[in-house]
Image 1: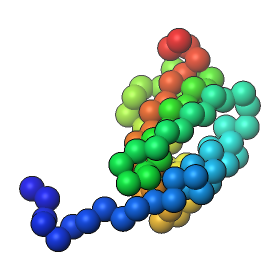
Image 2: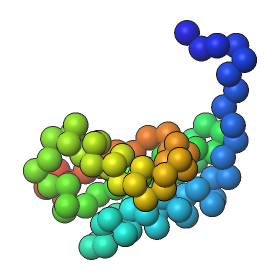
Image 3: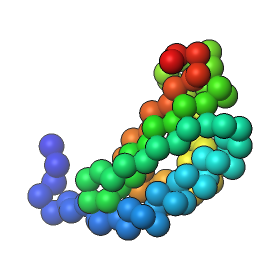
Length: 91
C-alpha cells in the first residue's frame, strides 16, 4: 500500500539520461547499444544490449547493471526506474 503523503519527485529526464548513458558507456566501452526513454515523472528507463552480458542469467545481469549504476551515479541511480539488459547471444 502506498502512503498518501508520498509524492514522486520530478526528474530532469534529459540530464539524468545523459548521466546514465555516460555511466554505462564507461562500464561498456565496446559497441553496446544503449537506449533510454522517459518514464513516470521523468525517470529514466534503460535498455542495453552488450556482448558483455552474454551467458549471464537475468538475475546476474540485473545485479551487475544496478551495481554499475549505483557505483557510477551514487544516489542519482534512483533516477532510473528500470534497466533491462540483453546479451548479443539472445538476439
